[in-house]
View 1 (cartoon, rainbow, N blue to C red):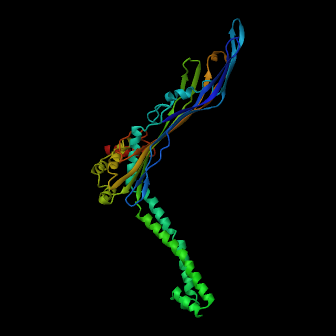
View 2 (cartoon, helix red, strand yellow):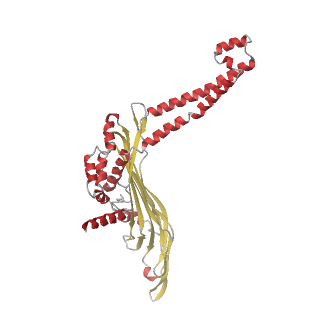
View 3 (cartoon, one colour):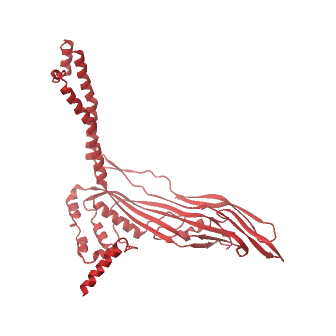
Length: 420
């Protein structure tokens, strides 16, 4: 990973006594910390029939940043050395030490559920979220509803493209057959017609008309032949299944307040939302050697554990909190399938407004406008999978989402009715 920083310039001017103002300039005002990898070329999987599949590549990046907004303007009076003197503090946009959030962002944005450990690090994939995304992807690929539609749709599109040249050829053949002047010559070869033309047995007009038809058919036939060959290639190509699963989290982070090492500057990061999306994608091919097992799996007969759990009373209620049923079903998801490729990723985003100010004269200030800006983190991590991943349990933080409260109330009502 290549860790780079982006810097800007900041200034401050302040006065706390009757002395001359103090001015400061910094050229190390850190605007961003970028963690980006070198580019990596992808590789291909080549199958026995010559078809190719592009492998997923591992990739990670992150950026923690500051976008300066307003500047600080603080003014007031202080009684010093027997007299009242003016005191003030003025800074450039974002504050003189407005990069404090980017240095302490790990304290503000760090969160194991989201996947952030430090502002200089790329996000990781939390185990709980990984289990959820992987299990959902396995269940998705077992349904066979993902990649088949794309492949068959592409084949159908190619076949539909045959309509135009085929229709043009059929129409031209019909017109030729309906032309009475040409009917006596339709069963003759080109060589025979040439001899008839030389001997004067066929007119110039009829001969030219016949050649126009014949040579007009050639490109149409070539187009039809090319499209049929393309359709055959698409029909012979392997049909890929694609399964996807996601785990989305959105958390509300409270206000955070920091002081720098000298306690002369304060930074407050406002409450903000933190979003994370873990996604798993799996690619597979139908294994002809195990087609029977796949059929049993589709019928729900290949996994006795999952069947027993489904038949257990109130099992679906337990699944609201701890999804035992989906995990058991996902264990047999690869049945009848040959693994091709896969990946799992985590995308993390958060932005927050911050205020920053030089606080040494706060107690004397009659007017105090803080410097401000936006700070945030944006990161992405993708890992590759070389074989079928194992499903795992995860804890549902919102077990009563959607219409589940109504279902729970209905179940409770039925249970109370049985007690009477």
